[in-house]
Image (cartoon, rainbow over all chains, first blue to last red; front, side, top):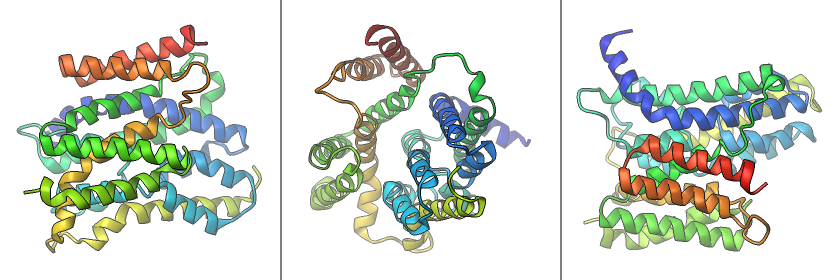
Length: 229
Length: 111
């Protein structure tokens, strides 16, 4: 490994430790769950490796255990993953000019990778591309690795991991606080909280995300001339 | 396993395709060679804090406030994480402490 890659890896790894905790727990749980439905580590690993979409993979277990309906599967994955659209818009500038790395980084965008990369500043002396690469790639490995461990050795686990997935909630809480540096960001953060709580109250836990996204979009677009000078 | 191997493979591929569409679409609509319209540039700066707020609520969406333990473990876990972070600004410390407190609460206190 070249020196610049190594220094990027060294500075990227600490930022991924909370994700490591959460992804291992949830990935292992996913591998175990798939195994109990008759899908071994090859299937669960394939799903994690090419779809790589956390909560949608859990939702897809129902799709794999009922009637074959690829059209429904396609539209469900569009809807459950619609929040990625916001990540893309947020990362347009950061991911510009990274050449062949760019499509990979886009493919590896998850809630957690996006949250870390849009909040954390690339450390001084470290190149942007390799830093983004290592955060994204490590997180990807944690998820796929967790899935395989769950599928292969899930039955041997005796450690009680209940509640460990709270690491991801805590990660979002911390990165949310980190995002609130100036007034413009505080207002936007508040808009995000209020709109999502409202969407949750009106539409319920299963259908809240798209409603919340629309509400946030309307509020931010309406107020953008006041917020962005 | 309820689907045939081929049906399973197709389902996985279709889910991967749907997910890829949501990931690549913004980058295809606003290619890097062209300056994106003003409202998209505004959203690029405004969205991140709002999305983080969305994700915090999204993570807690399954918590019931009307049945025991009334979301108390989550409230304490978030409060410990946020309080510690505002005080010490140490990401790993805040997350580790919040998670451990939450695990103790759900495994031993609110069983």
